[in-house]
Amino acid sequence: MTYFSPTDLIINPDGSSYHLNIRSEQLTDTIFMVGDPERVEKVSQHFDRIHTKIHKREFVSHFGELAGKPIGVLSSGIGADNVEIVMNELDALANIDFETREEKTVKRSLQLIRIGTSGSIQSDIPVDSVLISNSAMGFDNLSQFYDFTSENSLDQATLNQFCQQISYPLPIYGAKASDKLLNFLAQDSYFKQAYSGITLTAPGFYAPQGRTVRMPSLLPNYLVDCASHKIMGQRISNIEMETAAYYAFSGVLGHEMVSLNAILANRINHQFSTNPEKQISQLIERAIEVFS
Ligand code: R1P
Ligand code: URA
Image (cartoon, rainbow, N blue to C red):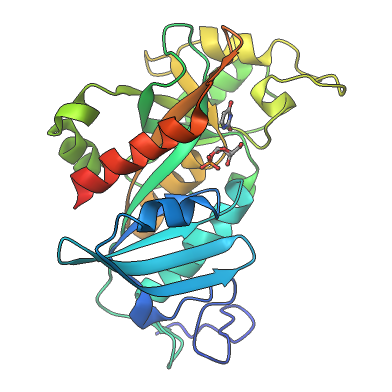
């Protein structure tokens, strides 16, 4: 049995994981994942009961009950580098015995639902719509450190070819959402009508999403190229900053994950939502309804 040393798997004196500050017995099987720490309360206000509130850095979590089932919500902050911490620690809490520091023999699979915001890169996917990421492509550098190959990963040769077409100089990775969660959402009348698409997970908000403020981008055609080239016969629908990392880690570690996006921006039509808070609140309410 592999032993995880105190420097590889750092456990706080109270038995909680280093960054998330969560103890194994507090972890629920279903967790809503949000970026903004202030969004945690906007989700947990819909729980029937909240019994645990934890806060460390950008990692805020609330655990409680919804319709008789244990439920949680956790904020990651922004970016795939934060997802790397969140997924390693959530999986450790689920699948490593923190007393013996050994992997558990029977593995636990978590059900993770991202409720996030995103920008559309297709003119016909409007601001204020909802989009479910059926797959995601990661333009961050995590695949330089992890082998993300799993049943859920996208074909690497196809991804490499896409990079060549858009003149992107670095390797990318890609993974699919959980089929189980996609099928579950397809039964719901609201989510059945949502857009579905391939999400581009960018390593930044400005140039990596085609935005120029004062710093010019080294890849000025990047956004239009991403929007106009197809991959696996599908267009790329939207850009955000976490989904590919969530899907890649979930695929390898055996967790079920789906990413729901409130489309706040349309990067092609140069529009931004006039009421982003309303859009995210509506998405939260729908997600709570369907998962309760
Ligand atoms: C950028 O403003 C942030 O918004 C999106 C991006 O992925 C990035 O984290 O998601 P959240 O609204 O969930 O944070
Ligand atoms: N979040 C992003 O990452 N990009 C957008 O355009 C909007 C929200």
